[in-house]
Length: 278
Image 1 (tube, rainbow, N blue to C red):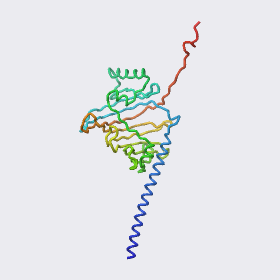
Image 2: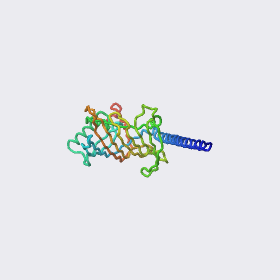
Image 3: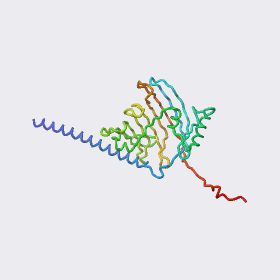
Image 4: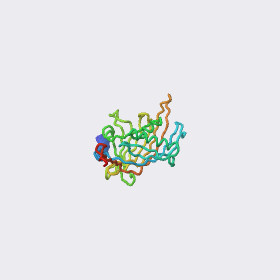
């Protein structure tokens, strides 16, 4: 009887030890993940030098689908991002590998001239609005990940030759206001720079349906993080129908030719100060 009670006690002790070890390991993983995320956040904390901007080119391939899977659009565009009056402007250069011509070129030139006259830029969102389309975007806020999400190290992987620690982030049950997303982050183990970020929506969000997902890879130029590639797979709610219909939009982009944006000014004398001609 005593022997059997001893076995029961030993089994309970082993079970308690296993639970404690698992809890300790999980807590350690949370601490390590948060520490690494903080290091990555500090790496890109805005400062005076962080205002640097770049001009670059983007090749964007977009495919649209109906709910039944039928393809409704498939095209590739080349954009160049420049700056007008210190504001970002996306200029369309090519469609399906061919330079603009005819009415399309005229319309793009008119769009550019109007932006110059307004002393304003033209973002992707503004382009969509001008075409009476819809614009959707998902922003990943690292500060929210640190405060509203449970972060855990799950594995180690190579990204573009860099050994990375992979962190999985899910909303805390105690934070109902947290964006309902599953976020995965790849952080370079040597320099704490973010190499890749992926996400999947766990609930509908601002016109995007649950299941919408995407990822983007990054590199650092002069201490500034810039995109190199991205993949977006959005399920967009169709508000024109009473029934819950949607359109699927899949976009793949690659970014290149990054050059630091610079501007210069020339001070010239006014008419009153101009030297008089003899």
